[in-house]
Amino acid sequence: MAGPDEQDDGKVRLDKWLWAARFFKTRQLAHEALELGRVLVNGDRVKASRAAKEGDALLLRINQLEYRIEVLQLATQRRPAKEAQLLYRESEESIAAREEKILLLKAEHASFPHGEGRPTKKARREISRFKSSF
Image 1 (cartoon, rainbow, N blue to C red):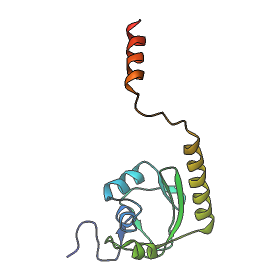
Image 2: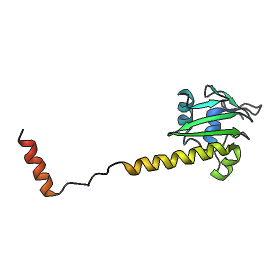
Image 3: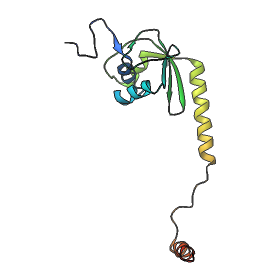
Image 4: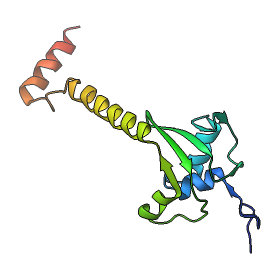
């Protein structure tokens, strides 16, 4: 028996497909990404209830990374990651750009100054004396 999200004509809600393809951990996160415009279908913002179609070109922005994918198959159930990768194809340019962005983010993170950790007993006393002098 088909539920409200599944029709008999083989249509799948876009938020459900994004969840099944393992781009988001929950359907709620997929829904929010669509509502906020972080997912574009063929260059347009769409609602979460839009039906996904084979051949749709998606642009996903997740955590500063962009994925340019094409929908190859439709699915309503979340399957293992190996099977989920068969639902879409990502362009070579997208993979290269994403890997370059990951390297850039790692380089930025490495350049951030790191603290020296928790202050010693002596350092805490000096901080206390400094604060009480005001």
